[in-house]
Length: 558
Image (cartoon, rainbow, N blue to C red):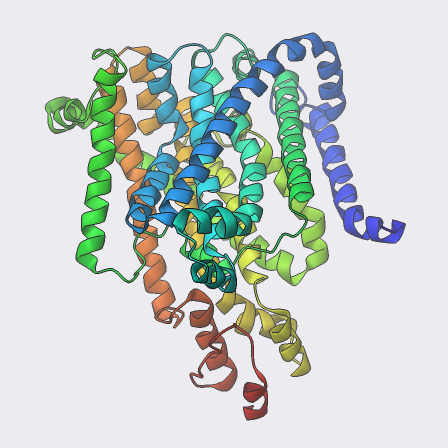
């Protein structure tokens, strides 16, 4: 790579990073000095050197905890994806399982794990829960994108489901698996740190909570810097190993991404069959929960079964939990709206101006790798202990996934169609409005849907550490007071709230796509093309059947 290309690719990022460091230095050294909000980068570096022995004693603990959860969670996701792809009737239970795991906020799960497990096991389990969903979805997408010709050849030679899965689909899924393994490294670290927050004796989470309560702002920012460096190092190491093992890396289909884990989508089965499958999946989850208590010899005093939770919620004591739902919904809703709005706007901006995207996106990725816990004291000092702080934290954890998926969807327009628009002298904004937005709309709406549980997670985290109200705070106080029935009830309500939030957005997504004319065709890509061709030609045209590109006949006709 030439020097000019390196400067062109990384010059803007380096300049922006230096500007941010300079601003932080000025704020921490003079403007906000002594307020416990921002630490000057030079002070953070000095603190890192002075506390090097402390980091040396705690970093290995967090890495070990995160690595165990990362390995087990990703392995489970890959196995479940393979079963769901091979056995058709297991797909919906697998997707519902992934949605349930993804929708359980860490704030709700951490106290439950702390009272049922010992040592660093809660952090490993949390890390495994955090990485399960992304790898499950990316693996499923990869398995579904196997070459149809290769699948026909496998069937022609009499290959069964297992051989087709291992010989054809697994190779096609390798890019998606590598992407999932790399993307989940930061999530595993966050899960480990959150687990250490509750009751561990060592680790970066213990350092962070001690620094926050001790108002050691240099140490808080130092832990954030070390955690971010570990997350980025793990991400790029896994990506590098993945490229060595898999030099070819075709991009995942944006249409498939848009429909991933959408339990409301219509497939070939009847509505009654899909309802029965969903109810059976819910029953299976409840049965596993119920049976786990006697099988693993868990204490009835600490671990509550579904019947205990239902009896508590319908009784007079349940009002203490149900009264907090509106607060958490308001906090999560505010952050969700702000997060998706900023993510959509910046996603469009970065696609329209690639130079800006190349400069800002790496910085945004670095910021997204910082545990959201670090932002809580900073946001609280700036915005106070109210709904604004909770909404801000929810927006922070929601923003980056929406940004990435929006850019992915807007860039999914084929090169041929972009050349066609340029040949007709379409302006930048005409191309955006008439081509990129219709093509990218499914992915943009899917990004908002998938980010809904993240907004609930951010809101409950802020409620725990900052606002002192809502379901997040109720769970932690119930844990401290050994009111385990209330703790389990609040955790279940919070999980159901996340799933309902997700499901409502799934329905809204289908309605919006249908109203925009993007729904109702055989695939998301072709549905989007119906809208594109209608906007160009003023009427509905038939989209190409095999690929979402304009053929020669279409060129001649127009």
